[in-house]
Image (tube, rainbow, N blue to C red; front, top):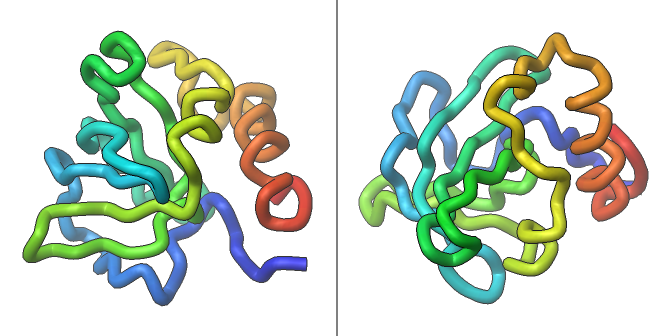
Length: 121
């Protein structure tokens, strides 16, 4: 069982609370994914919204902060521990529903990404 909480940045990620990641490039384990378009640092509800540009036809994806392995401030890059296909196959991002108070919407992400870390978290 993993000790990763998917809705919080890992303490080892190098992310400093309050630092703006918008515009940072996002790298999956197998290549670039896009750029950070939005960042939430709410307690127990931290996530990135990434604009994938032409990679998946201009779509946006929501990534729980626990998927972030490392933040490189100097490079302006965020590194993930998921592949491009894993991200592409994640629940569809809905900008009108990504409020963390929407339990069903958030639960879909917890169920999907939680399987990589030992179960829904």
